[in-house]
Length: 306
Image 1 (tube, rainbow, N blue to C red):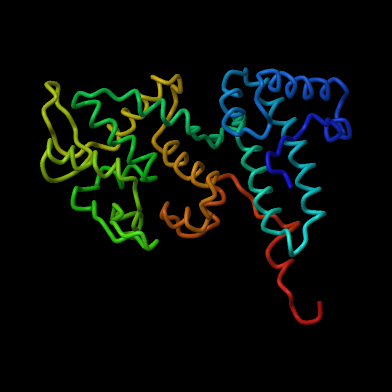
Image 2: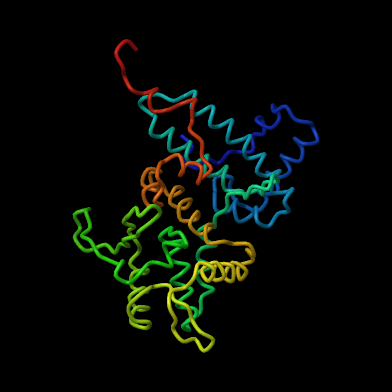
C-alpha cells in the first residue's frame, strides 16, 4: 500500500488547493528541484538533508508543498481503511507524518521550533570528537544526550555506579547495559543503552576514577569534579558549530533521541517512559504530534449494537 511512499509528482493536491497560481507554481518548482537531485519524496533523511541547503523561504515552500501532498495521501489511506488493513494503514500514516516533519522551518512568533538531527548528522557530530582526553570526555557527554536522551541535570549527576547490566528478555541470553537515572521529581527510570556506549563509559572510568561520569577538565587537562550544566551546553555548542549547526543545544540532542526512535518505529508509549515524561501528552508535544481525531483505535473495536 505505500511501500515506498513515492508521493509521485501527481500535483493534483497542489492544483486543487485554494492558492494563488503563483504560489502553486512555487510549490511545484520546490518539489521538482528536490526530485532533480535523484532522491525520492519518501526518503526522509534525503529530504531533511536537502532542506538544510535551502534558504528559509525555499525550505518553507518545500515543506508546504509536501504537507499538501501527504495530507491528500493520508485522507485517501483513511478512506480506504478496514479492520483487516488497519495495521498497514497506520504504519503508512506514521511514515507520512515523519516525511512531513523531516523539514524544520523556524517559527516567527518567538517560539523555538522543534529541531533534531538526522542519523547522518548524529554520525557527523560524533566524529568531531578527537582521541585525546577532551575528545573522549566530549564523546561521552554527546553520547549520553543523544544515545540515552538525558536531560542536562540528569547527565551531570550521573555516576559510574548508575551503569548496570540486566539479563536480556528475548531468550537469546546475554546481558544488556542500562543506566539507572534519577529524573525530575525524584522519579527513577531505566534506560537501555548500546554496548559501545557502555564500553566507552567503562574505559572513561579507568581514566578518571570513581564518581561522576561527566567531568570538568582544567587548563592543563587535569581531571576535575562534575561538569556543570553550562559546561554541557558549551560542549554541545562547540561540536554543533563543527557541523555548521551554530545554535545546537543539549535539548536538541535529547529531542533527536526521541525523534529518531519514533521514526524507527519505537512505540510512543515507550519513548515517553524512556524520556521520563509524566504523561504521553507531553511526549506528543515533544515530537510535535497531534492526536488523529479522524481515525482512531475506537473505530475498529467491535461493540454491541454496531
